[in-house]
Image (cartoon, rainbow, N blue to C red; front, side, top):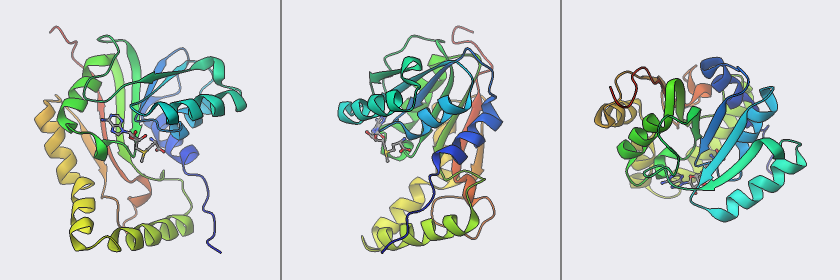
Length: 215
Ligand SMILES: C[S@@+](CC[C@H](N)C(=O)[O-])C[C@H]1O[C@@H](n2cnc3c(N)ncnc32)[C@H](O)[C@@H]1O
């Protein structure tokens, strides 16, 4: 029987909080939230504030809202159907945008990044990419990557190249530059290695909004 690996959302949430802080009263967005794993883990770790779970898939959002209620954070959670390329939120309306495991599926990733920048308030932060969290146990990280390598390799050599390219630091840097982000950093090495000490962090684009939209 295949061993179940530990949940990675709490360790990813810890990395997000290390970058974005845990100040209360903020509006968070989990973009491409799916069933809400990261957004709900964050709500459980920050004392107050609200989480907007956003995804084009209404079924996933319905499941996320059920889970939020079961975990006692339902009153701090809202679900919005939407896509990164055209986020249905006003300019400068949110404090933090997180997105895990979704960036690779956006049809126009640079446009999605421009939209994230647009909705952030001045001083707001974003962390976009994928990974297991730097505190995820080493043994589980190695096993996760072993299974991932196996499943991607089963799709053929071209799929391996595409998978690696979509998650490479060079691709992240290129897209952030194309989006016109004034400053940013890319953390981690990619999605297919367990040997690099940064693998637990995964691959993340992090930035802070330092200039208002109308400047
Ligand atoms: C692999 S799932 C990740 C879900 C969740 N963030 C997680 O870490 O478990 C990818 C998600 O991205 C969503 N997605 C696909 N295209 C998107 C887009 N253009 N904008 C926002 N989300 C998108 C999918 O509907 C799906 O829920």
